Image (cartoon, rainbow, N blue to C red; front, side, top):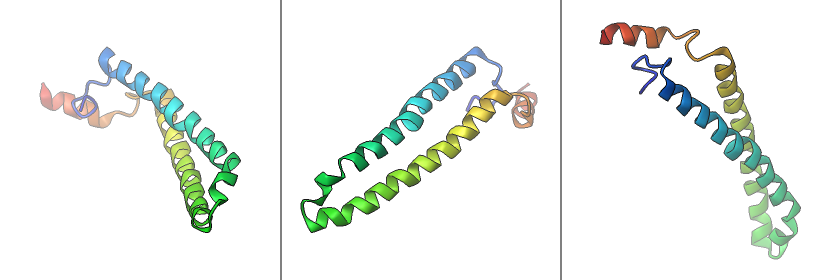
Length: 100
């Protein structure tokens, strides 16, 4: 909402963006590979019955897939942060002009 209203230079927006970067890094980037590692290292617990063995591969592939998605969005988010939110902010400038 703040982006569409053109408040990308406000301290509140920058604080929220910083919190988003920090939480995204810890929850998505660091925790995902740990979950994948934990699932792989404890795979012997999945093979006690045949039904559990069939469930391991799809679960593992889903975790790997989501890790790739998280890396993709994480890279896009951090590039946006490094480039600066307002450097190519035509939408925000237009919204600010309309509000004035």
